[in-house]
Length: 333
Ligand code: GLV
Ligand code: MN
Ligand code: MN
Image (cartoon, rainbow, N blue to C red; front, side, top):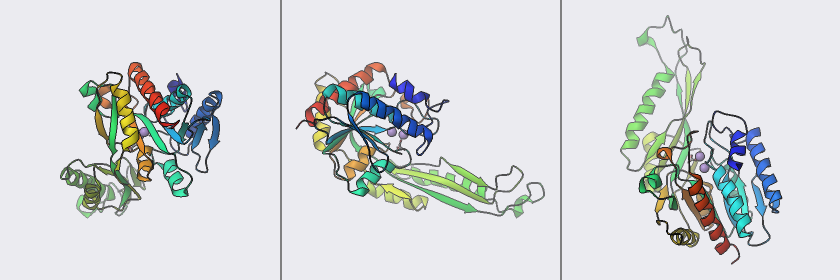
């Protein structure tokens, strides 16, 4: 129900609440109302992150983000917030946090860490897996071992604008052709680094006329690898200067064990797996906060960043139970 209310913000198709938009603000306002109704003390920090504190164990945080990719799904980020709120209400302790701008580089959690504000004693993030492992294993839940490292940046290509009809093919300097060749080169280079992936998801062509030879092209680059060494090799192989780089982060032993025990005590398989997606939990873990993540099985082959993202109500109910129990154990201590 709450997921549907969030999904409805901005209209379809898909979830469209990019960072910095009125839609992200509206989602935060809605979550703030829910926190208030739950009797939590609502606070917004200097970066716009939203916190709802209960009177007990407020230094143990649970949450996620409410911004989305363009045409995203119902669950990415939003599930972690809605489930986090419910788990805190049930446990009667802990703080729910909604970070700003996770999809564009964990803006809110990074700013929090950079400011030097007091950090939580522990952080838990519930999230959909966004991959096929749990579905293939037949397990509803999984506990994350580590979060992938990733780097994002841009590459630019310069050419010379000219007439599409009168410039001979062998006399052209076409920036988009150069970019296309580079994208294929990137794909070949990344395949030589085990566990590495890279994506070009944005392409801006200038001047952008259908009858004008492209003069300038900008492409985005998102490159990821399971360890720092391979991430460095990937960046070098692609040949770009990252605007930001997030090192792979191991999850904290303590909260990770608590999640695992809560999963096992319900007779569920104890699946541990790495995350190929970035998360605010990675930023907090890198800053020294013992952090752990609970993954909920993604259906539809694990598709995510797509409106077909899906998790079942039964799996989500189990996850909320585990999360609530974990907060109940961690927060009062
Ligand atoms: C966040 O969804 C990411 O890009 O990994
Ligand atoms: Mn997410
Ligand atoms: Mn995402």
